[in-house]
Amino acid sequence: MPLEGPARIVSELTTRGYNAEREAVTLIAAAERPQPTLERVVDELPEGTLVVRSDHVRSVLEDSQSSSAGSTSDPPSNNSSPGTASSDSASEFATSDTVDTDQPDRQHPSASTGNSNPDSSPRGGRSPVETEGSPDRIERSGDVSERSLEIANDMTGESTGTGEYKDFVAVFRDRLERLGSKLRGRFNHRPASAIQSMPGGSEAAMVGLVNDIRSTASGHWLVELEDATGTFPWLVMKDREYADLVEELLCDEVLAMEGTLADDSGIAFVDSMSFPDVPRTYEPSTADRHVQAALISDVHVGSQEFMHDAWNRFADWLHTEEAQHVEYLLIAGDMVEGVGVYPDQDEELDVVDIYEQYEVFNEYLKQVPGDLDIVMIPGNHDAVRLAEPQPGFDENLRNIMSAHDPRIVSNPSTVTLEGVSVLMYHGVSLDEVIAELPEEKANYDEPHKAMYHLLKKRHVAPQFGGHTRLAPEKEDYLIIEDVPDIFHTGHVHKLGFGKYHNVLAINSGCWQSQTDFQKSVNIDPDAGYAPIVDLDTLDVTVQKFS
Image (tube, rainbow, N blue to C red; front, side, top):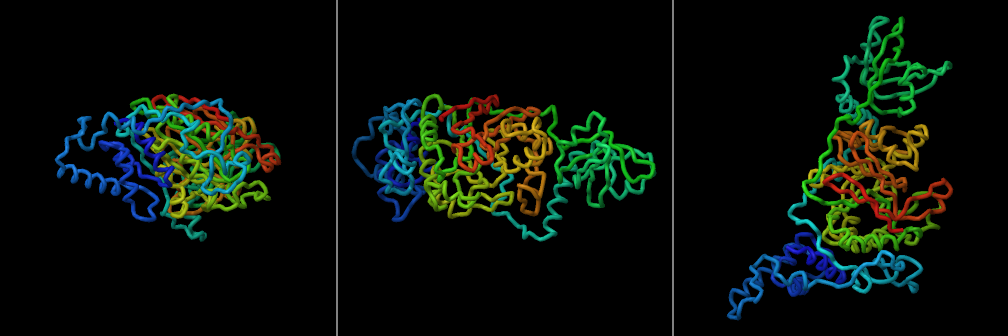
């Protein structure tokens, strides 16, 4: 079935004010005559309908088949059978316009109108579905039936925490148990209470949470580990080869230490330390065909600094032949700028109402091809709770962000695309990692290196009580239980990617130019970039639209 049809069908429905389920679009495209079918579907929609659903289309198709069965007229000349796209399907929705990525900046309207100067903000300009100056609707390279998209670790609707002390105890115990299980098989470990009663000079090993890290007067390091039975101190000598690992430690992460007890058994001298980590021999999965995913984040619609022209070029590019293999779009949070996120933010807003910000974002989302599979998670600027894990938006916001029927899941979540697992996490804890670790090990200019440490610790937000807020749940949803093939984050507005033990780590930059607040904290954003991943090879190319 030609895929040109679905792309044009989505555009036709969008310009009439409707969104559509993917199955509904597929049914229209597969009809003998897609254009008349679309017209009948729209004419027969119940009053107040916002989303065209598959049952609306089936009703029209069934009526058409009934009419055809009772008709004495000649059959269609294209010899198409019911349920099969005719040879004219693509041409009915074809357009001859082409895209030029060097064209002058353009602006697209928001859900609201009335701005008298369309060039002064993203709230004016041409419609997202106007054909003048817009690209050809190319045919995607793959068959939709070959796609597969599965979601894991989505806790939306599963929140049970009340914020009581016992809830925090439960979530940290879950963290220790699950991450500790990845370490206990490597050591003859003992609980803290048992180590305290062992004789001096004994060999000991313990798996626990980092409770405290401090330096001694002699320049050595004292690391206190905690498990369910108590705490025990471990001394890391400054002249040992692994002493620099102490600089990487964060409170509340899980690790194992092995060493020798002092004569009085009150402390242990560390001989080695180990992290849950990704195995060095990890072999990532890949897709069985050549298919690509676009990974972006931090769109920040509603900000005066939102780069609408860059977004327009990105959306146009997705309609070109160069992007014909891009079948998935993953957005890692901060769809909008939000309200009251930082001091004096209201002075930098183009859209001051939070719901209107999402309406404007939805209009921009409509510009991308309708035959993409889209997955979105929230970020710290979005209208969800700040504490992680973050549920994937309430029903009101889901209904607003309905363009192209996206999958909206929690932060974090794991998305598996044709066998390739992608851990999506917005990335607030990267601030913590970069602040706590030496600059050569984690910095904003190389955000993927900070991501390496989260993979090493097998937890997206190991430290509690700093920048990262934790919502205690029935389990620790922030654990990296299974090793992902791709780790995708945003938040820090910097572009960076690399591989850690064969796991591809990508921080995808942003779509917002430098704000006054960012200037005050010395952040120079990488804006207007779209990393494109080949799912069959895990190779990355970066498209620049700014």
